[in-house]
Image 1 (cartoon, rainbow, N blue to C red):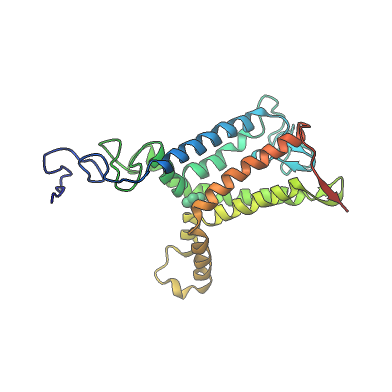
Image 2 (spheres, rainbow, N blue to C red):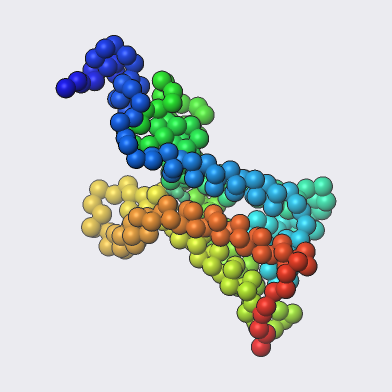
Amino acid sequence: QTHTRADGRGPAGTATGRGGAARASLRQDRWWVTPAVTVAVLTGFVGYGMWAAFRNAAYYADPYLSPFYSPCLTDSCPRDALGSGFFGDLPWISPAIPILIFPLGFRLTCYYYRKAYYRSFWWAPPACAVPDARRKYSGETRLPLIMQNVHRYFLYFGILFIGLLAYEAVGAFGFDGHFGVGVGTGMLVVNVVLLGLYTFSCHSFRHLCGGGLRTLSAHPIRRQMWQAVSALNRRHMVWAWASLLWIMITDLYIWLVAAGHLHDYHWVA
Ligand code: FES
């Protein structure tokens, strides 16, 4: 039997790197499937998201506003969109661009996504018991990765966005001043529910509810909130993927309707 020394070198003097194995992984299963799927889906989403954000057209099919463009803050937005005209006339820029930093920053610094893209894109490490692709590892202790600590601040904007998206989802029940329900209404409602589950299952939100206390049991309301968030937090990964894919599907649907490629079925009272 061989042992890895405390200095990180194997018995034959070979550098082992973090993770300890002196040679290729002993794992026999297809451990590479998860990182490969993660790369494929995240790359696909980034590609779609860039097209959606820059297309600057067909993002509104009355009464549906694409979540990529919500809140819609320029003059070119539909008249009744929340915050419309806040930035004034910006004809040279897509209304999705000024707000992009908030959802993007929230996702990029998310604890779950960090694990996902560190493993899949950087192979640091790619899977349990599989060595890192790189010898050196400084973690998140210095620039640029120490910036990941700003996640908690993006959370505050994430919560604000849930309110804004909920407002737009409620607006999707209004068809020319009449109450109605359409396929797009359902999609926007599901969108805000999934984003809400993702946001309120956040690790930082869990800490906000129950962290920083010496005795949690002495604060029954915060303890109950922490327990509820903890229950959601167990499936944070599921909410992360579900909300990511659904926002893409919702935007695609609204684009298809707005561009005249698809008819929206709805019932109006
Ligand atoms: Fe994922 Fe906060 S940890 S959103």
